[in-house]
Image (cartoon, rainbow, N blue to C red):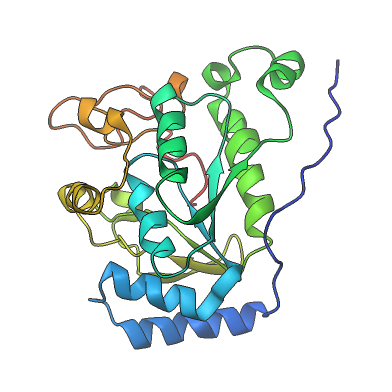
Length: 247
């Protein structure tokens, strides 16, 4: 049986600048900030430049420091949380704690199909049989829909995450989404992230201190052993290392 889903509406204000104008802002941002700009300086530039056309993406792991950082200079900023239906209870608890802590509009970004509807159409545990398709429907398609209504997004990408992110810039052109991508924590270490969270009272996912340096959906995430790559616990045993949001 085929399930017919009603496409969900995006939450952003829409775009007023052309891709060429946005690309020019990438160049301007890199010139103004320079490669050594602090995360606070990057967040301030992003807020001043894009206003309500700026969104923050947050997985409710250690990247909760990003919406805290941006909300401190842009109260009420939209924070996009991909509610896949497969999260750890700790992740959902972190989402609620963050919502009570910062002045931001946390938006649960939902797939077109519920888990039950996806199971009915594609079979149960699609994440085991075809994790790429599952990620596409529950993460990539929903975030693409949302990002199309903003001009810039802020992420928690850090260069030490993995080889694919090793050269992440503070301000980049996102060719896939035809928008500006801002990575204020690009140069941060994991310890710096934890230090910021501790000193500013930012709630972080409790699993981070239980061997989960990278946290995704519960069925596809395991603890990481000492010395392993921080993202080794994501889709363990598969060549897959990214859900597709940052490709």
